[in-house]
Image (cartoon, rainbow, N blue to C red; front, top):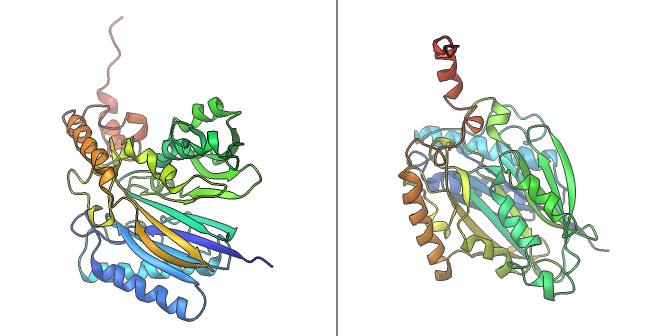
Length: 367
């Protein structure tokens, strides 16, 4: 009998080093020790701890299913322990993503980003995990569209019988808390109407037409949860590869074109998403530009064989060079749009305070 495995990727910003740039090694060590205890006890099958910018990334495999209270409690307790380390080191933004310090049964809605999927492990199970910093949940919309719906990106949609029927997209309206499913390619244009507005509509998951999970992303929006700006969402995304899913190279290809995402400095600017190896995920120029790292694993009986640092490849040098050119151009706009986010996307920054202060100074135009 085939057994399912659950892959959980849970991230949080619990303290930046220095400022918002990077992750101090003591936090990674603390998280590693915590998860190793759970692995030895048999609660976790395997795990890997890494960082993207100032975000701590917990990659865990287990057999408890998505949204398991004890798995989420383990992640929460790990983040709290790392927060204590961050306090001792006087790091910046200590516990930033932990909007509550009291666990309520599920870490969703408490600040950290969560992407989880459950599946039956195939004979060969390549897994690709994207982790981003200085951007928001909708950053995966364009790459996921290209990976699973664009034949100019994914050749398998045209020439591989296992992919030729296309995929099904689950899209969330993060403001109205609703969802809708679109079949590609039949409903491609309808899909694009919504996911082209990533500030509100976010691709939560992608499925094969026979219902197998292909990809899942974190959709938590910190500002919507907290009611004010407390940092960007810095999302994660899991993609299964090969066989009935796109090849690894097809999954990585969208990141050769640096698309523009929301985030960057103070979560209030547009900038290019730069694909980098893990050792370069330390955004310092204007707290950016936004970064994305990608780790690949072969899964073997729930164990994570790897990682392979998939953006540690000179073929992405040109994308990185183009990111710097785009960053220069955007920065020259200063506080003007389109570098600064439009006003309706800055409702959780200082904008409401300024608007309130000036409310009585606006005058009606003369007749």
